[in-house]
Image (cartoon, rainbow, N blue to C red; front, side, top):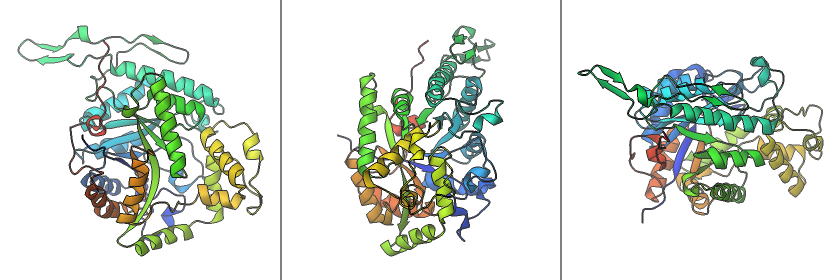
Length: 435
């Protein structure tokens, strides 16, 4: 029997994942614009045999937003450049269903899949920032459940467009002069509640058939959406028990609608502080925590609480109940998670900031320490792999040079890339064209 292997993704955020990362003296504060920075990072991750890198995105910002959200490169553009300087690693990026047309999204990721020879992945989001619509001739943010219903239809159109070309439609026979078998290119003629699209798309079917679909819903509606549609699901658990619950819940929902649970991969998000010694890793963690002020922590917490303004609230007082009593349109799952923590442990506002907005110390230590913790999560049913973030921007080299060899030594991670596409490496079948 072949041993089950971890799958590893890596979130690349330029100048850092947390709001204050850019302040560290070793961090390149303008990295978000520097293609060479991303090039070095992704090539290092490929040397470490990572399954994929991931570029997140947001479509609304203002001067008061976090540094990582104020200004950033558009993901598909950046990933297309990275495709040219890599050969194996998957390339995943965020594009919003709520504020994009399915035809454009289908073209973006079909193009990326062709450019990369089968390494594209789309992180499907519905957007959650209240003012996002103001950039798209809309007022406010659509209702949470409505956004997910629209997203299901959006995804159906995109997948339908990818299938408007049969795999062998491109003949390109110079002797006969036949470039295209027109009988194998089809109109979609989709008409739904939210979208209408005639088709066909103006690009051949992607090498993977469908680029890999990622999702990160944590509300009840979000979990149902992910279980029905996603190939891979990101989650942000606080404890291993919480991750196990999420894992079991998603797998059971998928099985209930007839999907093979083993073909839906769960990726807990972990922030890794790894050092040559335990003391070195602890020092890295201490440096990071010291950069975070309470103001930064409250700003980050506000993001998770649907933009709630914590200004004027006593951080030593019990967490404000009004966060839970008002209508939430954004990150419903995150608000519910915070509410469960507060109810269970009677937390103050400061304690919630420390748990939610500050980096966790769960994966801090030597390569042996971190690998042992990852192995425990992996083997106890908390995930099929991990979405990793380095503890301090620029430390991805230590993850590749210290942690990956330890995982390989334990027989938990590949020693060479297998297959040619991202689907091959994730153990996912290429979708058949229903036509």
